[in-house]
Length: 186
Image (cartoon, rainbow, N blue to C red):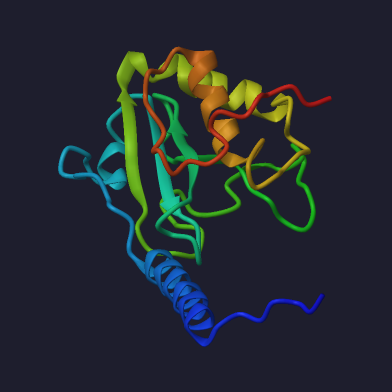
């Protein structure tokens, strides 16, 4: 039996479908992410000398997949401090003193290679103090500090772990792939 040859019409439809899917992916991956309203958040510099603890949850799009994936991190300071520390899980070639959990590898509000850094949520004053303490004291022992997978555990899994363990009811964006991954690493 001879193999059935596809008709020119069928080949055209298949090629058009492939082109349309490729064009859609290229368009979506280049769209800027929808950034929530930031007018309620003071500039970080204004919070440095206020004498209050500050905990901020940030997010930024990941390069080349901006429309579908974001990276989350925390920026914190104790009431006595005048500088901020950035805490996140960041995949890099080699680990630091806390594995892939990093403190101050990047500036507090710098993105991860794509435009669109935004504040997801913040706590100021007494409500921020237990969150700041938890991040500072427990991040170095995060159970998945030596593990990174695109779908999780990853930076968003770490951020959700902090939220879950501190009772902070902030919600990571839907694009925070990995936020629902289990934290059960060896």
